Image 1 (cartoon, one colour):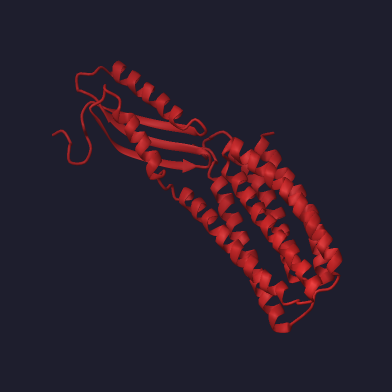
Image 2: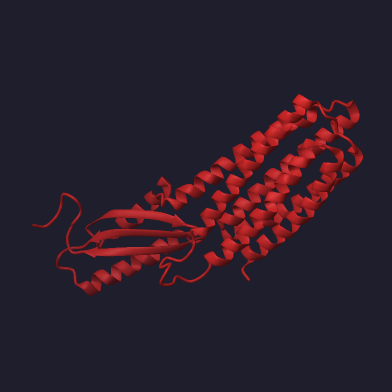
Length: 294
């Protein structure tokens, strides 16, 4: 089993424990902040389970139905996770506004404070582990999961601070106000996750810096006259690119093929932490638009 899959199983188990703790004391105490955190952990459980499914299937070899594999399950999982975060944020916002209007109080503060303290310790340990796995593998799904639990860690800390403030001052209005702040932060965090996943699903090109590195590498090859039609995209943790390289019309196919192989290897070494799939078309003349041979 890949370390990424193990990471999703661990995060699912942690989310289950947190759901049981927070949901129980969120209902007992009536705290919208604790209840919102419980709902977020419940969604974490669903998302982590889906992430495991996505990673398990995205690693399958290409077949007759999926010639390029199933790597796009990774950005799809990121979009779904970002969407779930956004929906849970909107629910928290609704509950917070309702509590401000109704003016309900928070009970069993001491128990709720203990539960949130335990949640912070568990979540912090999980964030450290997930960030280690994400840095080691560069996997988008694990990176999204780490970001998700990192937002949970910050929101849990804010909830704990609010409960402590209520215990000291008996000013219960801070609870729904904090809920509104948490929902805004969750929406802010989810947007780049959804954006990046959608761009990957739409086969957006690599960033300008990466494309410039590819162009510089190809242009440094003295055996070729020029190149054109460079196209790039990312699918999960894989990079796909295609390019036409132009040789002198007198260059033999063997020599051109050897140069093409050398460029493919150089392109793979250009992104050592990712899997690069280069497709190089060998041209005996420049057949780009406006330069066709009559």
